[in-house]
Amino acid sequence: MTGLDDLSPDRELLVLRAIAALESADGTLRDSEFPALVDPDLREVVRRCLDEAGRVLVRTDNGYTSAYADDIAAVLADEGIGVLNEYERAVLVLVLLHSVAIPRAKGRIIGSGWAQGEPVPREQISRSQVPETIIRDCLQRLEKRRLIRYVGRGKDVAPGSQLARLTPAASERLWEDLLLLAEPNGVMAGVIRRRRKTRAPIAKDYGA
Amino acid sequence: MSEHTADSARFELAKLRALGVGRTSLPVGSAARRAGRTVVRAGSGSGALEILSWVEGLEPEAVSEHTPSAKSFETLVFTACLGACWQERGEHPWPGVPAPEDQVFRALIDERGITSVESYSGRIRRVLTSLRETAWLDGALDTVRLGPRVAAWTENDAAVLRTVYTKLPRCPRGTEASS
Image (cartoon, rainbow over all chains, first blue to last red; front, top):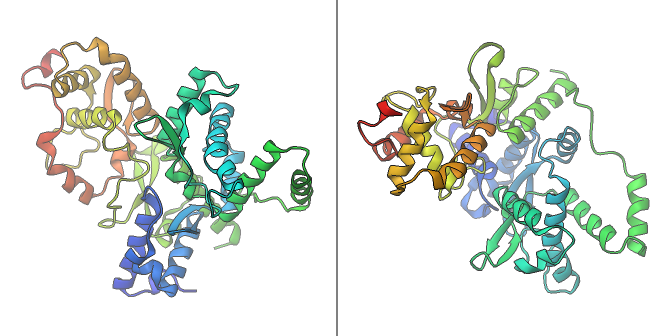
C-alpha cells in the first residue's frame, strides 16, 4: 500500500497540502484546486493518511471534506466528547427540520446533504416548546461550532458549514432520526427500527 | 505493530483533534507522521499536554476551525493576551511571560477607545474563561499565560505573527507598572 514515505517529495507536498486544507477548511474543498484530490493515486494516499488519524475523506455535492470515521465517532460519543446537550440538540433539530427536512420532503431541495438549506426565520425557532432564553444561548453555541449560521442580517438561521462533515452513514442516521421524530408510528419508522435492531454496532473497543 | 495498537493510535489522534489538547495514553508520534501531521508536547512531566499540529511549512492557509473567527471579540481578547505575554519579538511566543489580567483589560480599553472597563469586564472575563477552557490560555485566574495551543505554533506561524508584532493590542506605554 502506498503511503506518504513512498511518494516523491513533490507528490508528498501535494498530499500534505490537501490534508491541511481538508482538515481545517470552513466548508467543502473544490477538488480542482487540489491536485492530490484529482489524481486517483494521490487521493488514495490522502484517504490512507486521514484514516491513520481516525478520519475519512467525504465526497460532497461540490467537492471533498473530511470527517470522523463512523467507528471513531461512535466511541468519541460514548465518551461524551463533542456531544451536544439536549437543548442544543433540540434547537439544531428545529433548524434542520425547517431548513432542510421539510423543504426536501416537499421537493424544494435536492441532494442528501445537510449543509445546504433554506433560511429559516429566527421567530420560527421561537415557536417551539424550548424557552426563548435557552434558544438564544443554544443558537450562540451552535453558531460557534459552525453547526448553524445566521443569514439576512441575523434575522434567519441556516445549517452551518460543519454539517458538510458528515459521513454518508451519519447523514442517513440523521435523516432516519428526523423521520422517527416526525412520524414515530409511520411505516418508515417501523422499517427504520427493525433495520437498526439487526444492524451491527458501529463502535469498536479501542481500549480507551 | 499490532492491529489493536494501530487502531488505538488512530483513536488517540482523533480524540486529540476532538478535544483540541489532551494527553494520549500511548505513543502516537509515528502514527501522526503517517497521517501527515505532528504531535507537539507542551510543558514537561505529568503536566505535559499534547496537541495535534501541522508539518512545519504546511500549516493551513485558511483559518483553522479551532481558531477563533478572525473578526470575533474572542480573537481581539486573545491578541491582547498575546501582546501582554509575548515580550521578545525574536523568540517564539510560547511560553512568553505571565501578565496580570488587568494588563489585558487596559490594552483592550486602549484598542477600542473605551473609557470605562466596567461595561466590558464581564464580557472580557467570559472570553478569558473560554480561552482557558480551550487551551489558548493557561493557568489561574487573574494571571494570563499563553496556553498549549500557542506552543503548537510552528516557527512559520511565529514568523507570520512577527510581521504584526507591533500591531498587537498592548497597554499604553508606561501604564504596565500600575497594573
